[in-house]
Image (tube, rainbow, N blue to C red):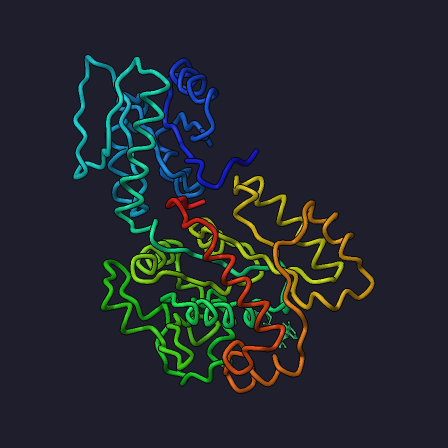
Length: 382
Ligand SMILES: Nc1ncnc2c1ncn2[C@@H]1O[C@H](COP(=O)(O)OP(=O)(O)OP(=O)(O)O)[C@@H](O)[C@H]1O
Ligand SMILES: [Mg+2]
């Protein structure tokens, strides 16, 4: 079941079933926070956090078993995910909040639902503003099918956002077969995401590896060779995206069609998934399969916006059929313009600049405006 986009996703590390049940009961009465999982074994906490990417974690400080509460907190602090941790304790074992230890706040049994919601909200908000997440939007252009227009749309959308005054970065996340290098005709030795330092990345490191395109956007390119793609880890992606959020107002990501660890980490960290669909039965079937996967992961429906590309090329599938298959009307439509798209892609010049009055350019500009009109993400990572 998914909730509103701003819902805080909470993970509880708790080995006492009665306490877990108590927390669950308190949260049942409200919508702002969703308990996504209870991990009973401290040794599994870090892996679950890595996989589920909650917004806040509560750890029972008195956790028994091989991995005690304090150790779980330490491991989460060192994991580099920057997810705030609340220590749950009892009055007989007082604990102090201490960012150096990795404890953002403490809650002591017994507590009311009001207290619980307040403390979770407070640490979430503090972490969000520290990450700078409330200022920027991260948009992933995705489709579970190749060749539907992801690269064409993400490039032109990023430029359209820049035209509308947004400081915009485009990330080529097709790490194996990144198209932007050839589209933009960048030199073979132009730096990529792999040239960033692996541990501490600063804004100046970022400036050194970005390609500054004449169209007014900055681009983080994919590695220059296929076999280098696997050197990019989930941790690298998390670090890069949180830094980009601090520097740019909008980050647009050209996604690969497959869902692996790295692409899921990117989708977790995005505010909006612009999912490209076309009037093609295999694309529609894959889109439905992915919708199931996204629901299972817990992405709220509002995180996904469907964009019909080549919307005037229905090819036997009626718009009503597409909407019925998706379970809702698509959010945006972009027309087909083979001649302009081919010419602009061949020249590496975005059509939104070359022919701003063409219908396809106006359609992309409308997607950009709609993204900016939506309320800035309340720092929700999902
Ligand atoms: N609206 C459109 N009108 C006309 N042609 C289009 C349109 N959108 C995309 N195309 C064309 O479709 C082809 C595929 O587009 P693109 O490379 O952007 O897709 P992709 O989803 O990024 O593909 P891949 O999965 O290979 O990365 C290109 O030749 C492009 O010129
Ligand atoms: Mg592409």
